[in-house]
Image: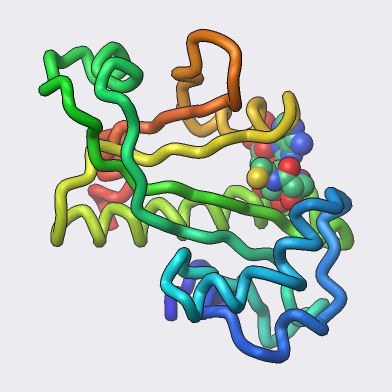
Length: 176
Ligand SMILES: CC(C)(COP(=O)(O)OP(=O)(O)OC[C@H]1O[C@@H](n2cnc3c(N)ncnc32)[C@H](O)[C@@H]1OP(=O)(O)O)[C@@H](O)C(=O)NCCC(=O)NCCS
């Protein structure tokens, strides 16, 4: 369990969450949450974390998923301003992140992202991790992550990909 502020917590996804009526307004994400998030968590494909508040409805305020991943080293060496080995570099992946539309615009997306990054910083003490990647599905999502210093590393056609160095995430929590 992770707590931020006194009102909100994130906890691992539970069986009842799929029926909680979660809707972020983007069908693929809603569909993923209802049909796949718990199963993928149970199968070890991702860990899915749900944002809740004892004082507030809906039951699921938001969620995100975390997995291990790797990226071509050329994609991240520029951002890291380091010469890296040529083989793929280890990263954490925030696969999905969404807030229920009834509570959007109240900084819960920011809270969720920081909660995810804190877990990643903790995990990076146990294993190699050069940073965090996200694959924003549209311009809105890219702008959202851009506000938190994620840099677009896709250079040509193909899915968008953004990267945040682990040192940047670590620095955000250094005074905690
Ligand atoms: C994107 C999303 C997670 C943001 O959550 P939220 O709780 O509404 O956002 P917050 O209140 O925490 O906003 C934090 C900052 O991001 C900005 N922001 C929020 N949604 C944004 C969007 N769609 N596009 C651009 N910027 C956005 C806010 O303006 C705010 O910026 P500020 O610091 O300049 O004021 C939420 O709108 C959502 O779930 N959208 C649908 C799913 C999605 O696109 N997920 C992301 C990619 S998988």
